Image 1 (spheres, rainbow, N blue to C red):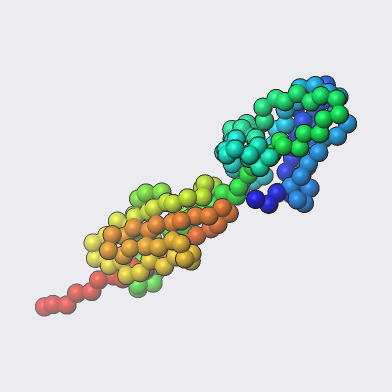
Image 2 (tube, one colour):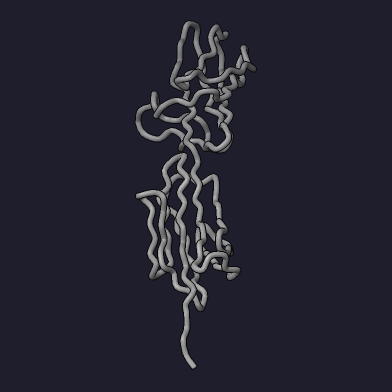
Length: 193
């Protein structure tokens, strides 16, 4: 994955610590001219990001070494003349899902309840916004009130969809993505004497 520019990186422990720097445009950083000793590195998450899982896969040159809670790496021992450039902090952008309500006729004051990962009660023009989600699959379901018909569910992402029969919305969120799904309900009519 591409590196992230402007991330604060702190040199922890060791005879040359503490030091701080920020990542370059390509996501690289360097602490040079260190006295040999035991060091660890700590990464500060930018807003809207989370750490990738630590030490995944068999290639230590491309995995994330940062603890997902603290952002710190394990301690490593640098010997004289060593240049160790394998200490990475993998990060990904968090995602957002939005459920929006529209009614026909417009402006209805009736409320509509949603359950699941995007839960809440909204009326015409309202939204349920859930931020800071790890990329993945999420669902929300509309409890269709008496006197209303769920006519359409339209999502602005081709990987997300809805089922008007069950009222279920399936969100498939990628890193950094915001997906909005609009549920349009039509008020039922009646005729009689």
